[in-house]
Length: 83
Image (tube, rainbow, N blue to C red):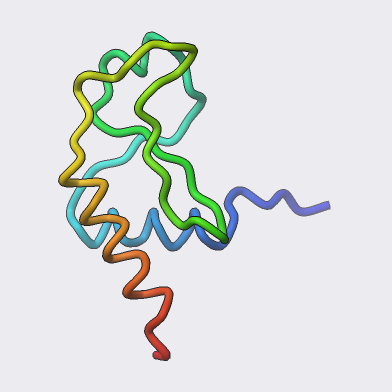
């Protein structure tokens, strides 16, 4: 049986991030990593990119909303591009 590592939306978002020249680290979500990371987000077919700003009541004060907004805009422009 072949393992599927990523979904289509997630793969597209990872490609967009690479195109933006930004490094990524894929992995599990923990409160320790949440405190030190600049951006956390989830992906889904219906919603595209969804920022994660709080886990169990703990806020990520390092978050970069401008990056998330740019990522969301690029994702949806590619999503609706007929090419």
